[in-house]
Image (cartoon, rainbow, N blue to C red; front, top):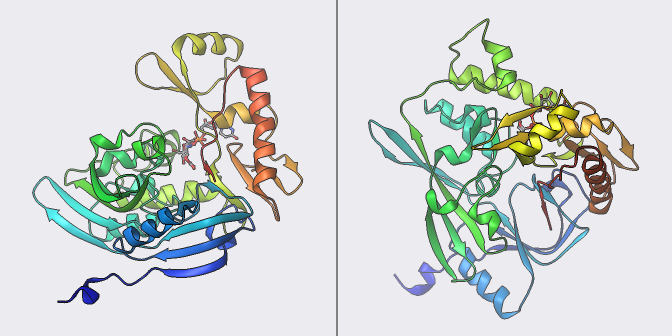
Length: 346
Ligand code: EPU
């Protein structure tokens, strides 16, 4: 085989590309030079050019956890790497290797069809498989970190592909090594390890309500369906109202601060979070400050869930960040708690 046969197909360039459909806030955004990445092999050559020309660059998955400015200058890599393969299966577990561009929810649905339950509590989370580990997506008592085996990524500093074990990914609540080292890695493939032993995880209040009386041992498919129904009721469909899911992280505070706060606010909602720490429900804090359903120009706070900021029409990143600032200031004033923005600001 000669070298021309080995060369990867060059990534497709789409100059001045409109990204309104590729960010779930639905902001009017243009990418100067967008490249569709459909194979990992396309990345080293492109990153070499970017580095030689000293161009700014960033990676976009499903655009469901980002706040984008009107113009993205330089290069935007649109991650479309497809495919999922069962790469190992034994009496204890199954390993599935998945391309970064695969839609997360479609992958979860596929695992159930393959009779590989485990990910059902994470159904209907928008975005791609490659983006999911960066913020360690979590919902209804499960986190993606529980199921990661390893991650393959292109390291833009070493200019080489690397494979990180689950331990090397330093997962924590809505956090990972990738998030701690922004602008360095491009996730290309994620290997999931799904244990053969399965039991339903129903400790989360909404699921307890759904199943405890009627059916204490639901199937994975029934949990998947319930999670889809709960999420659809609570969270706005980005195709209808632009949003990026939870806009703030649930703040983690010390037990001492918690004791002080609960005295002043007996209805405060919180969960234990490791030794000596509590996680507060940010949605409740924002709700108590009266923001739920409020509208400021083209943006606002969702009427059914105060943790979700929405774009009602032609809002921009500036509008959303201004609203976020006023919420942060008020919550700090009333509760003395700092709210951290969850989506990545580009
Ligand atoms: N609450 C209010 N008012 C509100 C919103 C919430 O009083 O306007 C109260 C609820 O009644 C509940 C508590 O706050 O007692 C927590 O609310 P909820 O159960 O809706 O979950 P959450 O803490 O707001 C988190 C995740 C979600 C995930 C759900 C379910 C974060 C930042 N958010 O939300 O993740 O789907 O739990 O597990 O951890 C996302 O990250 O985009 C996301 C949607």
